[in-house]
Image (tube, rainbow, N blue to C red; front, top):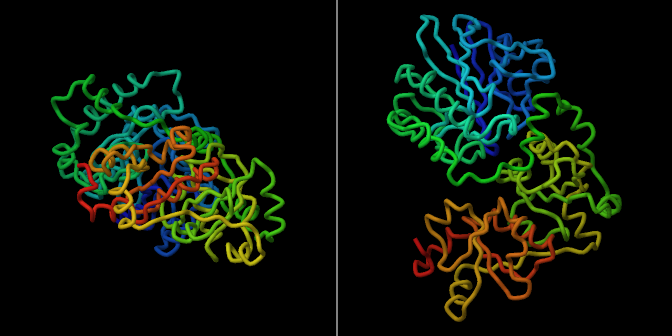
Length: 462
């Protein structure tokens, strides 16, 4: 028996390759499915089933493409209503894979169809539970993302999840391995651990949602406290996962094309088109195309694009590091951004050499910031999330998280100089690009973020 967790850090998402005696299954595959097919070919194992824990909201699954390429059936738990052929399993249904078996355990709450998959080894011992978004390490799935909102309340979903955890999962053995669908950074929960594997026994001790003495009301209150609004792209991803989508190979045929500077400029003139610059924050800071948005490939490109680009169908022009164009298109497609028109041939160097207008981000070192702050009163904005801000922040800094910055553009000064920072510099440059796109240029970015500012202890409030 072989279990491989395939973790995609930029999405904080885990899919699984499980193999036994020449047969394999995939749980919650990503949209680009080549890695699963390559693994099965390398091990000479036939992909027998594709299991989906629920209709995902935060990424587009590869279930349909993988099924088409392998003829493996797609399996959901009860209550699933996909618009394509699949097996809708009943609670407790068993699927044999080589010498092992996988039992469907229906655990509604995160969504109505949410299910976990219990793997039993060849001796029929409970070995591992693949929990999707029902149970994370340190948290459970939030109950406000279900695609059926309006038909059932968040409170009712919370109560269903409470019952699922206590009736279906807590009675299982303490040595059972828990393999979740996400880790820290996912918007599908709020307290996820960086760990992506644990035993159920450890989770019973450390996970607030599994506390034995917790009432339904307490569970609901804790689960829904301080939840941020779900990202704009979530409903679109649910729709694609439920009703079908284009294969990544077809997306690449349309999107992976080089565009000359002059054609690029012509396409830019369409006010609905967005220029997305995925170079590092350091490159973007030094020079970029005016009104472009920066979300670097070196960070969480896909989920941040989903958070910050309001219209998932908006035409996108790319400016990429050389030879990263295909990777960029695939990563955007993972969250349903299928409308990339093409990329600038030769990258930013081509733009610069052609004599086109360029813009820059005004940034200063933490030493310069320290000197300025001690001389005069300055306005400072912290674009990290609220939990980070609550732990420690620059004294007198105002918290406007990057996730919601578009809704607070009018909260920034229109004329007076102000400063912005994040944890280390990645998010503050993204925020800078959004501010500039909205006509705000009277700010200074603090290089290195709070990580560097903390060298001056007198500036920090903790």
